[in-house]
Length: 613
Image (cartoon, rainbow, N blue to C red):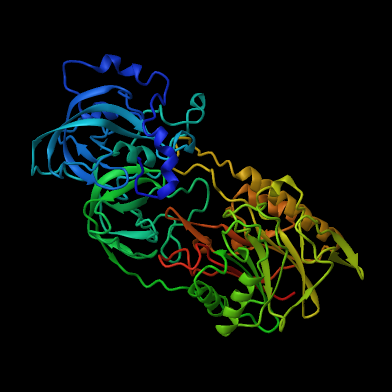
């Protein structure tokens, strides 16, 4: 199985595509004239595009020095020709896929015969670029103990500012057939170093150590810097060229991977082959790993609301269910009390049913919520009450059997919930007038649950609250995930973001419902919040805000503070609170307690908005 590290079943289905060939029409035929009396060199195999001109061909006695050996996951080794050509577009390194544990060592001079291929991490449909490799190899040792080719430095001076060329329309938007321009485009620069021995100097960590023993750094310390040390993803054109994933070659049993948070520094020299994998693209697989120097980053605490301020928050608690250990409940509860200052209304996403992922038809979440609210009380928080609508079994997506849903927690000492003919999973709440003011027909109720936009996705939960005599409508959301979208390093440029279509429809549905409320009362206090699973600059957010019905409150923050999630070293917005026009003055806080840290209670940061209705 060819994967950059063992992620169990995540790549099990990809064996069949382990040697994808013919990615470009005629790519193998193009090599016919390349064979001559001269021996094939690594730069001949790599060529000047992403696809080898020798793709699918047999090569004999390709010479190189072993620069790295991987004994786990995708087993094999990298070789590099110490005698480089004068073309910056052609890499001098290549991966040799052995399948079995390699018998070579770093510093060996070898000759390799085998089949040139283009392996696509994640498979043909993933959109990922391919890795040029030699498979089914016959390896002949020539000598050992050789000096390694000098590592090529990757730094702020060598990586271009422009991310990628535009894909060729005639090739479906692919960049595979384009001649590399490594001095102009960052992706071309990295591709021109594929398989080569590279190094970075002291670099800031922009993606914390994850469960798969990898972290992200930036070699451009000034690039879109977040206030707390990360790198902001602020537009589709701000991909952040300095980001690089770091793994290590040494097995974890032999050398534990360092634990790092955003803002820490990976000091000294980190050196090893440059790989490409499906979980982040270009990756320095360190033979020599620098030392993590810890920074001073600490979880944030929001300011408590004033007596006359209503504090409303949203928090994705990542598949919480009663089978989770008590310490997860306690840690989340402590965060609600200490970091979120016990908001008056808290919308939760990813509350699972009473037995979690056990797929037996259970949909109630009473035990989950009783356990969580008890933990909040034990942490010194208020005696929260809750309101929700149980989903239909297996109809809302998420972890199979988990039946995730949104839930309102509210502090009855500060705010009251207006119960109006509570709805069920399939009944839509509507908008009416009661005593001359806008009201929901069902509270709690679901927004437009029969709309195809919500198929296999969480339906919005709407509720009416009263604070100091003023009605506040709150709509809690968990929009469709980004699953299926191509990564930023896709061979399609720009990458295909197929999941956006569904979120756009979901946003239009919620926007339409808000407009119904505003049609009855233009001064209604409406908050739309939750895990929107999309950026503040996205078409999804634009659709939510359409017609001035809502304002994405995270835009009130300086750009360096706009993020709730860190993905592949990019700090970005997924969680949002949007306000209706009547809510003119508010304070907003993205409370950074999880996304930047290796130790997380959830992978999302909660959001809090305070205002006076």
